[in-house]
Image 1: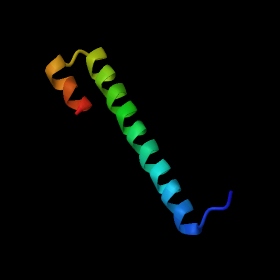
Image 2 (image 1 turned 180 degrees about the vertical axis):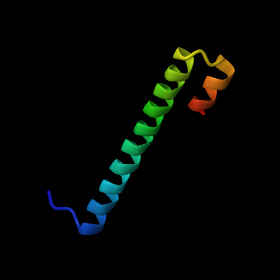
Image 3 (image 1 turned 30 degrees about the vertical axis):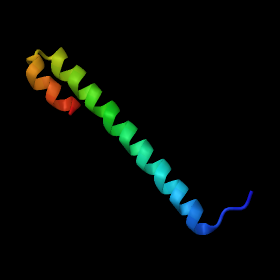
Length: 50
């Protein structure tokens, strides 16, 4: 299967965007869990999940 340079570039860019979105979501979840573990009120720790 041969892809042109432009198509390959688009596929790589989309993969990068998806990986970044997953990374940001995972970090927000981890920060929320950390905030709750140190006793921050739920209303404040929920701000990490926005």
